[in-house]
Length: 104
Image 1 (cartoon, rainbow, N blue to C red):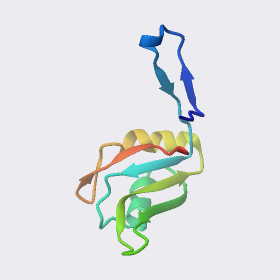
Image 2 (tube, helix red, strand yellow):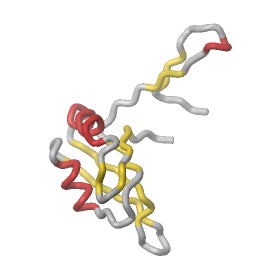
Image 3 (tube, rainbow, N blue to C red):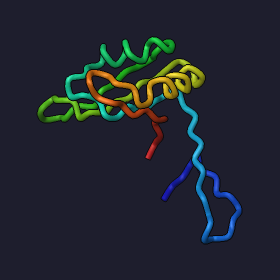
């Protein structure tokens, strides 16, 4: 398992804890309504600062939303604020989950 942004605290093996610290300008947004489109997502997150890119992931066969997407901001500070303010909010009738995007 590759953990690029994880720190292993020095504890006895049975108490080992991994603490992840992600700091990024890119947010992962889950729990989206299948009807939410990129302009709606941009409008919702744009109130927190300047956005570079918004992408909703769609099925390659049907073209329908898969219920998640990404929002990239111009700075880590703006992304952190947006993550804090938008997590667990209602968007298009669905409670969204917002976290930092990371390479997996």
